Length: 397
Image (cartoon, rainbow, N blue to C red; front, side, top):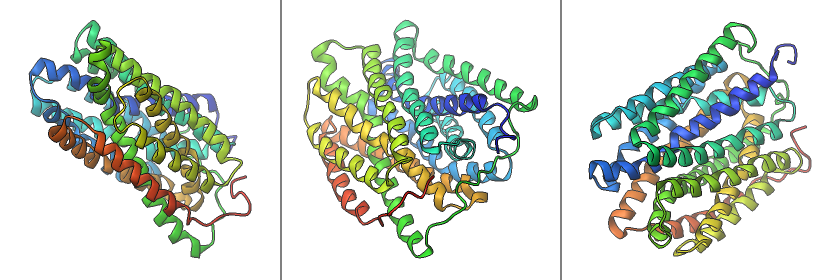
């Protein structure tokens, strides 16, 4: 495998940058929408619904993206992703009505769907310490969310919301061109690299049980992730902005701080996933979220920010273990497709989360009961994941 990977640092750069850009483009609308709300004089719940189809396509596009990545080229698919994200984001910035913005946000969501099935399998098959590599790569997902929130708020304050779409779009196109050039020059392999680390499969009678529990876990964890990511800018706006005189840039900075700091837990989780059973990592992360979600039910001070940070950190820390487990029991030739199935579940839950956020805000102008329900869901999930089979030795060496 090492002879095929001529430039491992280039692979690390593009995989990490791709993760950052994907999450930035999938999250920055939640800050930008606050400015559009003022500019277009439409309500928040009307405008947030424009992302419904896009958020759905982030999930639905994962299966065809995974299949194409397996059959064609993972690196090539990532290059297409960068270009597509850039063009779509620029078109969002040029939108002048709700319909055109919805169409362009939907295209943005479709190109976002490429990263996880192509990028995660790329990292899994080109790394030696896989848990650590996944943890490092996952940090950039949180950085992307944070950077998207901060840069959007800053650009809105300096220019307007249109440029908050256009500037990142131009950067993404340039990165995509760079990746195409490195593939063309042979510095990055066009062909898919296959690792021999995951040839051994677990016992057949355990696969169905693991698959069902993982599916339930992925769904519930993704639901909480989407609820918090989507509602956090607005709940800070509702509970803290007026008291503390926060503007868009301050809200963006707070959300940025939460996701960048919590993103570091991905790396710690990756190190732990190389050493300890995944079940233990899952249980700690799920229980931590469940307990802390009860605390932000009605918080309206700085503890809201601190507790939110810990919830996101617990959510992030289990991702390397989750991806390792999927790599362990998925057939090599369909590995990207398996990740595609995971992420169609992860992101297909987003429209449901957005609908509940919109409905909650329309009914109560708040999200308190949504957080309470999420906490109960995590506690139920804790007992479900507890039934996962324990292992007497690590399967990943």
